Image (cartoon, rainbow, N blue to C red):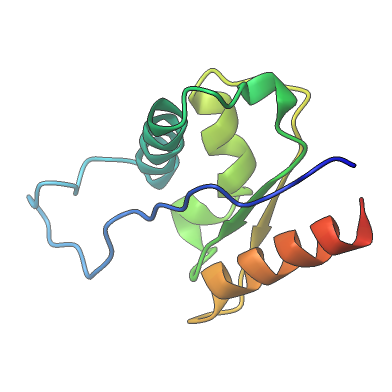
Length: 110
């Protein structure tokens, strides 16, 4: 029997940016790429090539965040291109929905 589990979770800073603020020049994809790499660094036993799927919750997929930010961040981090990604926009429940979809996939064995 194979055991599949969620081992960690991280999030990026949130809030209304201001011109000249510390993150004002950071593209959302780069911010998420740094977050993903930080997550993987915290879990050295996880081989990125063994990741089956990347599910990302994103509240506002508009403007710079409109081009599948989960996938773009995975690739921007230099991670394996064969890993698929989905970005979920369910407004305030985006990250929670991503976790629910992940759990449902695990429960279904897919």
